[in-house]
Length: 387
Image 1 (cartoon, one colour):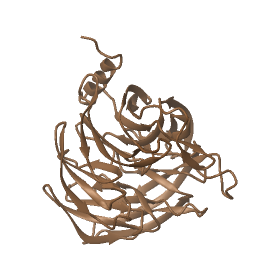
Image 2: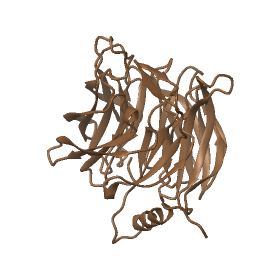
Image 3: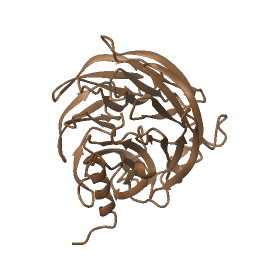
Image 4: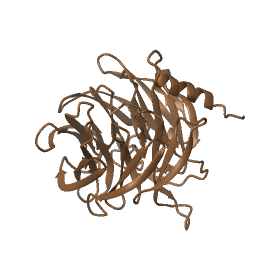
């Protein structure tokens, strides 16, 4: 039987993930082949290439062990991919697709691809229809339920998961169609989820979960202007949300959320720079990395235009946030992910079709450590085992 060249390395990676004596770490980058940036305007490129996911081993420095075609989109937060807790299935959301009526523009998509990572080679085994512009997606800790934030219709899709068999079992309205649900994350006990809404409501919705029943009791938090990226600490005691702001030149912030009381509530804010779009957390919950666009997605005559984005590293102690260091990264920077030991940070440089690697020393200082080329523009990233 013919097998593709990457089948064997991926099987080795998956075997290593579940072998106690072997170290490996699975990560996935979702990559969009139908976008570029022209003087601050997202534009359809002259040479469109297929959307892909790149499957990586972060323990091997970010080695790409497979790259397969899977629909994705740059629109929405860079959290459009999720990995099941057992590492065998990935869910990849496609928020926008090329318009059938005008191939120079995009229109909302509704597809969520189910990828069997244990297959040889890995492959898309089904497509689930969600709401309009599905974006952030997450599994619960048991791997039995997944939630998808639908940015263009104010809803969250509820998915039942049994191995690689995924079905949509419900839809929860969390706001007006203009509310912009962006990302959704479960608390570790699986009883609660938080949904950022960066549109008309500028809030974070709190969902209650009882088995497969997900409800919204109209309880919202208001951390600031345009809540977007979100992570929940592995101990379940706090969360951190990125406030993407209005993109008018102001320095924007992240906010911590206290999850220990009778109700979740916003606890603290920390200024990190202009347009903190994405946020990721180390496996131990001690660090968060912020993708700060820093005016690099603007036209060259914008007063605060920069040729570079920034990675900002923040220490997390409960709800206390302490800015430790920053490092320059590519323009219009997207998602990120930590290595398992927290000593490397992988940043998505969308315009350069690569992952930038940053080494983190014992004091939290970052330095450039090279890059990993990809076939198309990286726009979303998740790491197995990370919050």
